[in-house]
Length: 441
Image 1 (spheres, helix red, strand yellow):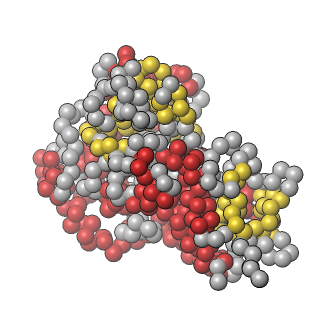
Image 2 (cartoon, helix red, strand yellow):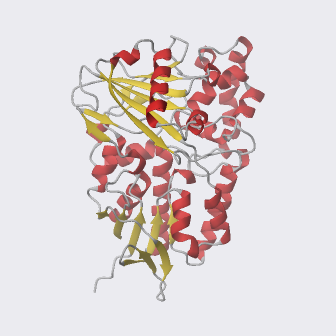
Image 3 (spheres, helix red, strand yellow):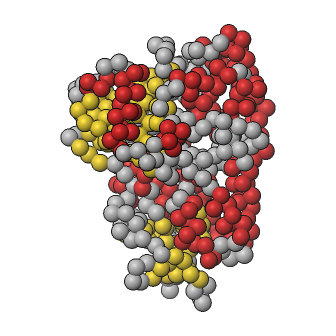
């Protein structure tokens, strides 16, 4: 007689939820993937307009995004996504390319002052010293004792912080170097340091949606809460019905996870989830009538420039790509400080200001804009401030104890690993491993 496959409900069909569900289905679980919105994708859900793939938050990737690239390959979309289109990185105000090819190239970062160009050569040696305390897969709690700004000024100098360390750490997600833990930068450099960035040929949101289409997905399906059944299983309350599950994975932001599971959580779990903070995000995607460059280009905007922009990305079109051949695309992301200051300002006014800032950095760019799309969210990237990695370490210990005591509620999301798409995938893989360890013989 065959045994019943353990049932798992995954709440949230963003990147972390889809990866977790994908892994669990392939390990023999009976999975239900629930999404409260009308489609999968979460924050990555974009749209097609006039041949353009309008992605909310596109970023360059490198070969260091191993878990993400492996997932794309598993979905069968590798040939559509790869090879990555090489990106030329520049710092606003300099025409020189930022081309890091090893330790010696660090001293040639544009805009770094004399002696500080020599001090930055210390970084690889420091990383070697920290090697046993910087793990890309687990929190580096012992180094979570100072901000990136304090770390950079102490060891390298303020121009190194402004022109390189802060912008590079903020490539994948917004942040404030004066609040951000230095661990976030160390993990970023460990993963991407001297690797060359590139743009995928299709949007990550499209990958997530197509992968979700192969899973038992239910959209327009908000979850009201969780209850513990008398038989020890979990009851997932929906509108008008409930699902029985042996385990539940909450692949949502921390506030939503707390709302859904609060009655079943310990005080320590509630404290951690309630303490996670998010940064507001504001961005503009602009379709251009012509390419601004023959190759993709990323421009980092130093804090000292006083611009509302933190980074901008321009991409020329290619055949069968996400930008039509002969056209161009620009993506502008604001600083968190600017995003927080315009919460009550109309979208059209904020969009106009960001496009004007784009024109200051790239003169004449506004004349090439055919149409644009404005994005705004108050809970964008999780804050990885000083102390967050230590809190993650404590939370991981609590979770191990709770699992040993029989808890079958799990959590996934970039707030548990690193504020990046790679972090979201790693969190999903970790939670899938935990479910297998707890439920499979």
